Image 1 (tube, helix red, strand yellow):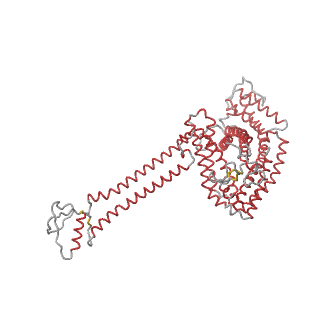
Image 2: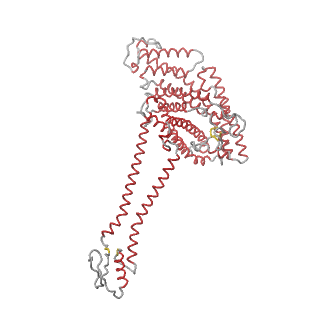
Image 3: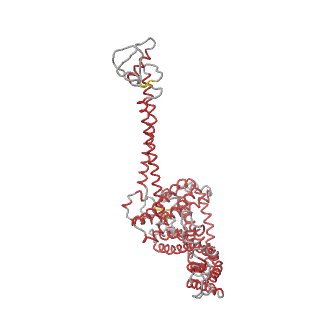
Length: 619
């Protein structure tokens, strides 16, 4: 039915296959062990080549003659030899072996030689089978204990009675996990960048791989959430519940993957031992940002003179937010330096992490202003190219349009045999109207080139100009659509990153899906994805639409956000922590404090490890 059901069934099939393999191996091992135990008994009962078994010795009169042993001896007759000089020991050994039923070998020496040889051979036959059974039993017991412990302690639906958890509660838990895991991924990426700057890309490669794997699991969970939002009315209760369980499982797996790497990451970074070096690195980035903030402020002034307010809206408050983060970073860097001078490396590392988080967000905000300047300039270049390409396609659709480019074709115009001929006259008329409108706007005052480009590309796709959305479209349309998607996705990503203390799962879900569609527009679908969505232009527009849907949801969450701490956060010093809380720089509750208590910065890791420095730095 839906793609997530296929993923779920494939995982269930893999689990069933592993169970069947384990059962087959256990049965095979049991059969081999049983045969190993029975084989010596069968050999003793039936005899074997070169081996005789002493029969029972009747207690009749003592006779003379040779001793007969084995199956050839008569059951009712007893033969016992008289001792001869020099042969007493051998006779006694034969008699003892016959009386005890022990196996006799080709030689005996001493009075107890037959008994010792027989019992020793029997014990040797049993040592290996008994050891194998004991080892298998110990391994099975150990595996059972581990499996039981893992089942009891995990937070996925399999760790509890799934039928006892209502679907509404499972939905709520999944949404919370999506937000929490997304925060962990963003924080881990942030600190990983600082570690790479100090230790190099090669040293941080294992942690980059773990982060990418966690991102992949989280992206799959976000995709399921989007599918539920889009198709909830068309899914059965069973399918919905299965998807919710997959969301919880994916988020939990991503968090555990990061948690598993946290100890090794701490050893690599050695923040408590290399506090001075890391502090100098953060201070260097801080100083570079102060100059860039002044440049971004000048860029915003130029925006307001040249472009419409809507064009500047995504970054209108970036400079002020960047200044706020830098003020917070200044305070934390100074306190980190003071703690280091006192020799309190744990507290110095904790305050340094808060400063790094604030510096990183200031960098994101300033970069957003600089990037938008480039995107607006690129849109102004692309706009005439897209206009020309659309007008050419319109002319190919209607021969009369060639005489008056930019005008709407007549309703009775006969289509020509081209890719654009799949459109109808009303569709091309709507495109021609948008073209004329954009041309008027470009001749007037302040404008929004990105919005004009968006209206043109969407009109062309809706009308099927140039065979869109299923065909590739012209190069100007492809580049224009990709520029739109890149700009809108990056703007929402920056907003979520710098406001993640308030933004919930709905905006994050649409952002994650927008990023996925943008990747499909750039590189095509991944091997495990079906080819859906049409051309790169259509994929770009899907990414742009999702990003545009995410932005108002994120802004709504921020408006509803409140600071419950009243400025008394972290170590209780009275500077302004509102921006640090809003941005998620201070995100971890201090261990031992109530849920409404102060917060400290998070670090690389999942939900189980991201607050480890908060505990160490406040002891």
